[in-house]
Image 1 (cartoon, protein in one colour):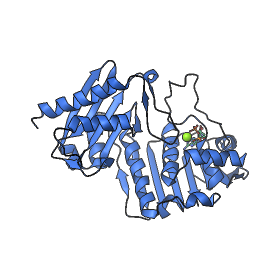
Image 2 (image 1 turned 90 degrees about the vertical axis):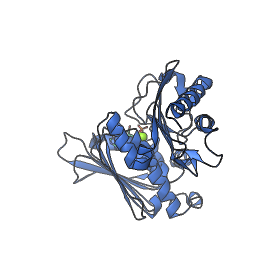
Image 3 (image 1 turned 60 degrees about the horizontal axis):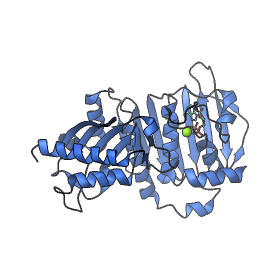
Image 4 (image 1 turned 45 degrees about the vertical axis):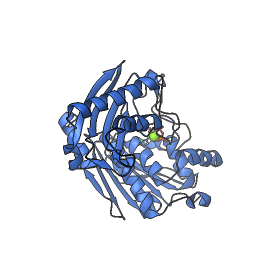
Length: 325
Ligand code: ADP
Ligand code: MG
């Protein structure tokens, strides 16, 4: 059983940033308004996520760390309103690290904790805690030393963690995110209203106020696919594509088709080694896209890739043209 979880962990948990992604998604699924993250050693020593979400009742803690136990699966796989649905993350993390889950539901007057170390589950015990959930992951990959060798060093792992939190935070502007680590990268993203102005403020906090000031608004629709957001003016570009934030139905994605469409939109106005900065939100009928091709990857499969490409290239070019650049 633990071997199965470790194999799943090999798929889902590539590095500390994958743990952070899974834990933040769980907190968001639990309706958290505030998510507080702390890391040490690039997340290999410690990842702690504190949320003020719905919490987990003491009797459900053993289920939460069991394989394929999810409280989220509806009957239509395409109609996924929650970020998680596989029930794989916590058991996978518990199989390769020291995991503790401390939780107190909103209506409970006490909290409880469960600990899993290298797959070994300890009995639930009562503890003191506020409402919400505290997840701690220590000594990631201690149980699978071969994995540890693939880690890129504290700095690189820490910046991958910051990147994950920044990306997901644009999709949830009304949630406050804080991140503190033993490295220099820390974040404090205040909650903003879920409207256009709020989103622009969150974009400013995440991608820099200079981007917010050098971006052109995009708003287009083609064949039921909606595209909104911001793309930088050509004069404001970067040396890499790390600052291209793209979302499909509210999920951050990194996808070749989308990246190549953005490149094509700028091909006449940007040199090859320069990259636009974007915060783009694509919305379409969930039946027309698969955003869960691989649990740990962020690529997507559109039923009609040509339509999406055409929309991106056309809308960005038009915006660049009408902005007089
Ligand atoms: P999934 O998210 O796919 O359901 P996970 O392994 O990530 O699977 O989590 C298992 C279950 O544990 C979730 O379905 C949820 O019921 C519970 N859970 C995990 N984290 C939290 C949290 N921060 N707040 C409330 N419930 C949580
Ligand atoms: Mg999950």
